[in-house]
Amino acid sequence: MLSMPTLWAVFLVNFFALGLVWAYVAYAYPKFIPARYWAVSSFGTSVGAGISLLRGAMDPAIPILASGGILIFISFLSAFGVFKFYGRPVSWRYAIAGTALGMAGLALFTLWHDNMAMRITIYSVVHSAPLAAATHMLLAGRGRRSTQVARLAGIAGALLIVVYLLRSGAAMVALGGEVTLIDFNAVQATMVLLLVFLSMAWNFGLLLMAIDALRGELADLALVDDLTGVANRRHFLQRLDEECARAVRSEVPFALLAIDLDGFKAINDSHGHAAGDASLRHFTLMAQSMLRPGDMLARTGGDEFCVVLPATALLDAASIAERILQACRLDAADCGPAEQPLSASIGVAQWEAYIAADPELLVAGADRALYAAKHNGKNACAVSPLHAPPLAPEAGDAMPARHERSRA
Image 1 (cartoon, rainbow, N blue to C red):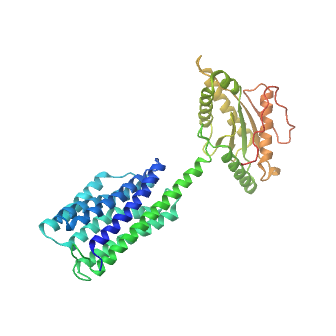
Image 2: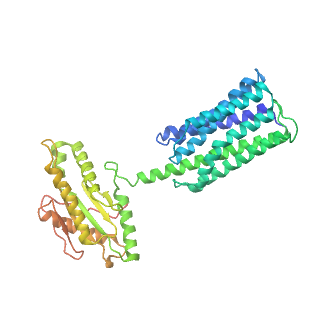
Image 3: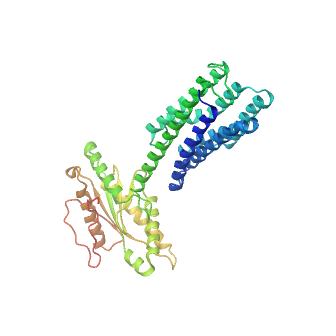
């Protein structure tokens, strides 16, 4: 038979260690808000367990009510971390009301009528309420990519609720014998050990969810251009491969815009790189406002952009390119003396059957059309068949190889 102080010491040590882990996650990833809830709940559980160890050193009513209140409130915090993980709102009124109700029940059966079985039941039921809400959310697994590991935590949560209810029933019928403040009977000791194990499993499931979500966010960041917030070169090449493969299967063409800002080097040289960066961000906003849902704008070089237009024919793509140019012209007309007007040259190309799954040919066609737009005076778009001969860029306006396939 295990003594109660031994069991509370196990809780204290285990959850303090978990608190350190969650505190590190919250520090390393400050935008991952659920880690803050789970860090506080782990440390709070450790504190509650520590207060419970004082039952033999003072009037037992004080640690019973203090530790019970802390542990009940902590159960809400742990559930709120799950809510935050799924982007759901939390209700502090619900937490405060649940904690007050639980403490009132504990006080009733401590100060008015000392009944440990009722205290176990009240604590178990109130503690299980927020746990049940979080468990339902985890098992539903909606809104985040970490569905499988969420189910692991959800199963641990469901088993915790089952053990809490079984423990309450065993206490009410005195299964295994009397339970005192100092000693648990064998049945209660076994169930408390199960609660320790399942609580650790619950937290490890949450930790795996955090790792999976953070890994996914890092993968997403690897596909985004830091300056403009649109897709980067890597993402563009991935999407281009996907659209080529889709076009092969469906025989529905798509189009590509190759965009280069005119005179961008002069903005950097005359006004500094900060002005150049602001111009790139401004152009990105203008271009995105002219695109449709599903179109992808990507920054593929310094002042070079591409737009992937799914299920779009050549003339429709040219119309979209003209909309982007018109937005630039209207914006330039409204520029004040201290502002830098922007213009662009755009090349338009369409996927054709003989390209198959090789996007290099499509990129080459869009680049040829872009060079034609530059050659014909800039601030314009050009549509070039893929079999058209390449045009040399203007002198002094040479362009680097835009879309090398190297993913290094």
